[in-house]
Image (cartoon, rainbow, N blue to C red; front, top):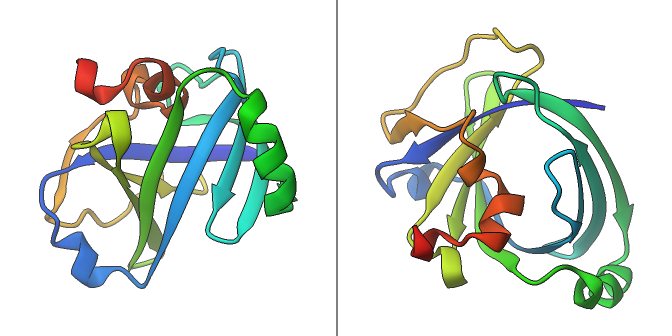
Length: 155
């Protein structure tokens, strides 16, 4: 139930050639408080309810609990979410022992492209592709819950 991940900006769209999978993701927040976010997500043909705790000091790890729900249930819950939502396409790119998830945002967050990599421990080493840019792991502005309230277009 511990999520350990690092986030990076993406400086080139070359990652698309390397992607082996992609899904559209639409999500909203029943609670966007950084202490405990509660998210409803539709990813492709799946629905999810996710609860995340506050990130640690480095921003790399936090509690994450996720439960798959039906798309119909997610569609019922999305209108209950706080104002502001996230719309993006997620590309999955395998590299070495890991898989990068690259999100290309739409709507009010259009222009933002961000990569995440999940790790099994905070200091785990991993390969960095050339299209990876600045690390933004500890910058809360790049959390999806923050982006739903303070869209990238307004920065």
